[in-house]
Length: 369
Length: 240
Image (cartoon, rainbow over all chains, first blue to last red):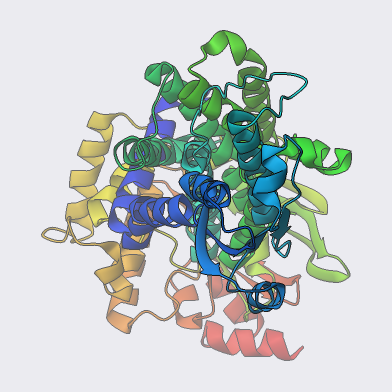
């Protein structure tokens, strides 16, 4: 009588399965929304900068100056779209936004090069969008320095050899898509479970349930079961789509990824359950869920590096389970590391999950005052 | 006399508002007890405290010898409750609702199957087992709620305005069902604002603004107020 009843737990889980199956809206949310999100984020959140329109004012008009321009073009970062006759044309094209960068090559360019002197070229960048400006700026400088070193005797002091690990071509999809899997799992499971308890409260079915001997823990865990499956289903969809469509390589152990994914799903579900148990109406639950989901996109480091955030904001991010799961995801998917590198994150997730479960059960009292 | 429910000096306040004001009554085992009163008089609050869902501000409630405030779960296992508002799952079928509540009351699969067959027959649900509850008529829904509340053979049935908005024929059938259960020894506590229904009960009590006025048999209150019907008594008590 006082123990946990498996029968009640199973009954709740089974009932919840049937209800989800019959509720078309949750089904659509669970399986169509991930596709839309993957497509949207996969293509929209592209931080790679390619084919930036560049204006050229070549006052030297020599073989060397043309070579410099074609080097820039070959990097694919730049696309010379406008060949100006004078500086005024360059300025007005920048003003109108026709070009995002400009290169001005002085007339004595080749002469100075042949004398082994460093000729000055003017490289102008439109800084309106700092993300584009930074990339354009550094790749422009790098290309021009390479040009000078390779062709002429301008030797650098330190010879730096670079190697980019894990994502050598620095494709931003490889960074965003694994993170997106986590984000999708989080959003769908939290939104679905946020309604799980409050829906029964609003429809009045909770009134019948609380006069039965059911325990909070049986109810909450029972309700978690079907959503865990949904969350894992979403994870699989996102994973397969990421691998097949966006060509994200999974370098680590896919089974480990799946087990830890389940851990994260449960953690996210607990957040939804907590929202549901404190909300009085479904509208309130939705608002609370959004209040959590929107900042979590930023706080978790899904888009912007946590390292760049002020300490206070980074600290708040420590309470978002997605923060840890992103490290796990990117670790396993991109770096191919095993659990030995991920213990910290795994343990924090378990701890967060248990704390959330405890609070949900305490908050969901069967008695009202 | 043995009592199924004992209420002593029960008070419930919601902030400043006194919903139930120092009421006392006892319900003998196996009897039908009607709590009568207009909407908002405190009937539902009283019932919720007896069910262990709401905490009393003051007073003592005992159900089958258990203090409700101390052993709410013990009490819940022995109570069948039908709420004022229909509260079964409309997106589950008749059968699924019965199976669900059977399991919630920790009945075994065989017990549930046996009970289900019996109740479906008794309440006339044959042929509708696989219908979604949302598609049933109001009277059918009330019967199903009643069926689900009796699955676990409770010793006490608590029915909160079970016949509100139900057609006269269904109401008559409903009271016949109550009678059948009462005759098998189940104690029934029912609230209503249909006074004609009170005539069928063993005891009636009138509730106004949280205060309990008369607790007696229908015959006794009618004599006391020299009335021919409970409805008449109700009007007299109410105008006091």
